[in-house]
Length: 170
Image 1: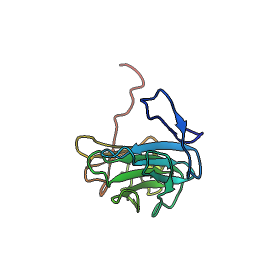
Image 2: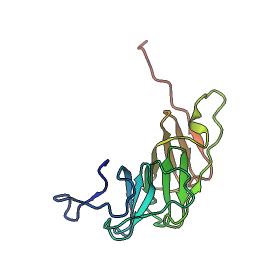
Image 3: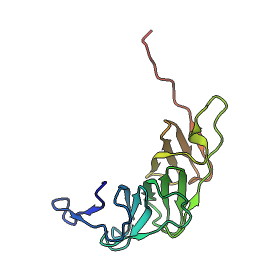
């Protein structure tokens, strides 16, 4: 929320604001480590990635390697607790050490028929998802309306060409 982080410990009946350590309270995304719900990761727009190891009571920045603090998305690999992905206004990042360090992923050049900036390495991430079945499969939706997919955990990317929208019935 734009008011920071709220945490519930009773199934959502009551909520408490827990922002100790968050530099900016515009939390855009939260990821929970699959095997340990005390490990939380917050994508804070204007603040970067923050990590909590105590269920959200306190937060510490975890941005080494992220060169832009305007984070839109953070997602945790559901099968490997050490792997996280983050999307910011200038690209997608991957951590393989539970957010201690981040590496920017590289996108391919756009296909010849495509004139979008979504494929440059400063692409604005609108959404980032990991397949729960095969966590090597990733999908990025750029704010320009373009989709990119990876089947090798972000090493290579393929633009998805969606069918043209039908504008009239024949």
